[in-house]
Length: 261
Length: 253
Image 1 (tube, chains in turn blue, yellow):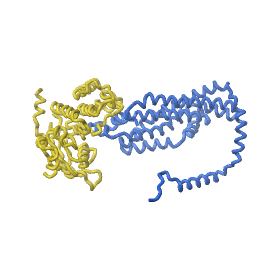
Image 2: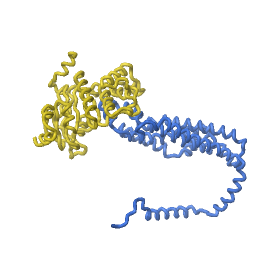
Image 3: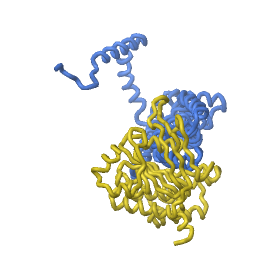
Image 4: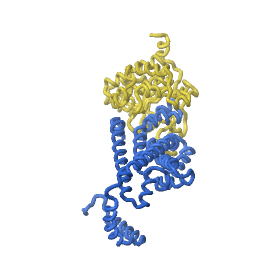
C-alpha cells in the first residue's frame, strides 16, 4: 500500500499557480520601492487626515441619504424587472424560445460592472442621481434574474406535475407555485443585493452619478484628507448598519420557515 | 344514501381509462415498459403493484402525458378533451410549503381559473367555500390557515387529496399513496377515498409496492414485474392468500 494524501493535494498545481503569479508580477514591472514610500506617506496621510473634519459631517449625511435613496430605488426597480425576466428564463417552466432570449438579456446586463453602467448612464441622461439609479437598476436586474432562475429551477417538480395534470398553465404554475415556493430565497437575494448596491452606489458618485461618492471624489481631489475620513466613516457606519439590518430581517422573517435551504 | 350515490356504487362496465399496448421509456430503443394493456372501468379502484424498478412510475408518467409513449395509447374515455380530467397525487405530494393548507387546496381548481385572475391570485368566495368543504370531507375542517409544514405526513396526504377533489377529476392517479404511513393513518385515508369515490363516481388508479396495502384498498390489482404486466387479480383472491405464499403464487402463476 502506498501512502495517501486526502485532497486537496496541491504540489504540482501550486507550482503552476506560483509561476503564473511570478509572470504576472514581472509583466507589471512592479516598482517595489513604492512600498517604502508608501510607509512614509502613510505617516503624512495620518497627520493630514486626523482629526477628521467635523464640519464635513452634515455634507456627509446629506450625501449618504442620497446614496441610500439611489441604492434603494435601484434595487427595487431592478427586483421588479428581474422577477419576470428570471421567471421567463426558467427552463423547468418555459420552452427554449423564451428561456434563451431571457437568459441572453440577463447575461448582457450582468456583464458590465455597476461603475461602467454608471459611466454609460451619465453619458446618456447627464450627471446626477438619475444616472446612479438607472445604473444600479440595470446591474441588479441582470444579477437578480440569474439568482431567480437558479432558485426556481432548483424547486422539486412534484407540484408542477400534480398541478400540470390538473390542467394548470405554465404561467399559472410560475405565479402560483414556483414564485411562492421560492419566495424565501428570492427575498434573501433581494436583501443581499441591497447590501451590495449600498456599497456600489457609494462609488458611482465618482463618475458623476450622484450620492456620497461625488463628495468623496471632490475632497480627494482637493487632498483634504480630514474631510475624506469623515465621509468614509459615515459610509462605513452605513454599511455596517445595513448588514445588521439585513441580518435581523433574515432572522426575523426567513429562517423560522422549516425546510428553507 | 342518496340515489346518485347508489348509482355510482353500482359498478358500471363503461371504461374510464384504457391502456392499450403501452411501450414507453426514457431513451428510444430502451423501453422500460413493454406492451402493457388494461382497462379500468368507471368508478372502480385499481392498483398497480410490483417491486421497485418494475416500471410503475414510468407507467404513471406516461398516463399523465409527462412521457410520450413509443407505441400504444392511453385513453381517458370518461372525459374526452377536458384538460383537467386526470387528477394526480405524486408520491412527494407536491404541496407548496409557503402557502397555507387552504391555498394549496385552491390550487386544484386552476384549470377553471382565467389567466388574468390567476395571475392576480384571486379566488372567489365560492371557490374558497368549496376548498373548505373539501377539507371538511378529508377531516381537516378548520385547518385551512395552517402551514402545510405544520402538518403530519398523513394530514399532508389528505391536503393533497382535498386539492385533487377541488379539481373534480374523472380519474385520480396516485403514486405510492399508502407508503410510509402507519396502518391506522393508511386505513383512514383509504376510507376517505372510498367515501369520495362513492359520492362522485370517480375512478382511482394507484401504484403501490405493498401488495397487502393495495389489496386492502383496491377492487382489482395489476401485478407488474420487469416492465411487463404479469397478471390481473381480484382483491378478494389476494386477501384470501397468506402473504409469504402470495408473491410466489403471483410470480409463478
